[in-house]
Image (cartoon, rainbow, N blue to C red; front, top):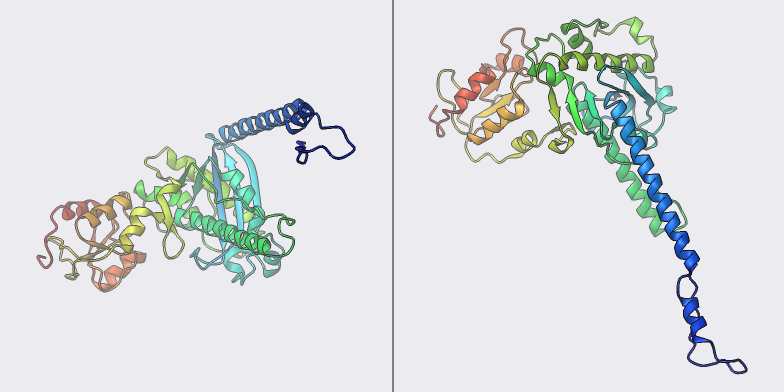
Length: 390
């Protein structure tokens, strides 16, 4: 400890004048103190290097992490996570660390058939802030593998930010109260930082695999993998959620490893993504397009065989083989308008599937809105005319 003496300009009556060399020596840090601090800094630096090396070894041994979630809804902005399952694995599919947690969101968990958990099981679960540090450790620096990236990653980011905001509010409140500085600040963790995110559902689209059902088990079957039926059953409903969710996570690993050998994978970096108004994590290109102003009036429904016109509203269905970002970017460059939602004002829907229609394509067909393939759309975009020229 460094100690300081009071003023020494005058000698205290009845005492000898202070030795100025002694005062200077007392004011200066002792060699022992400096050596102690230096030793502590060196020990801390060594410990950090050892921790960093151990962390790199963990990630190198199992550079991938598969995550499955159970939630109360389909939108991260309004739904909550009630379970999360995590498995790290390597290039050969050998698994490493595993983690599963039931989560109590502190709100209505919704019906059991949606996520497989009873109200009592959820009430006994952990709060998300209690598991966030563990999720960060398992996901950080690895390739995150999910099925339906906007949804799964959207829930993880939404819950992480909710937990961090709550901790920040609590810390500010503690700082304003009595005993400031005496109570320990909450540190719940951070939004996980994966190196990249692979979406197996989007990858299926990019590879042109025809699907009757987008659920993971059906995708696995379409790939020729042995997988349980995606249809709900009494037998499955009677099994513990932890068992069925882990089964899903392991199947996700098999689907990823299989798709990787077949063709293009849908890969995004976290920095390319942000939440849309529903909390789904989508590309900046996509969210910017939805929020962009519309300077051109909508001339109405496109007529096949005629040029597209500026201002026409375009919807991109999931059933396309091209990267949707490329289609949306081309749409915006040409002065067209982009919408996530299909309405009667939609001019054209980009979709490669023309039979057994589902979702946006099915509703477009019912409303008499034409469908066009991604290749045809890109060719048509190059010939866009001014408003009303169609």
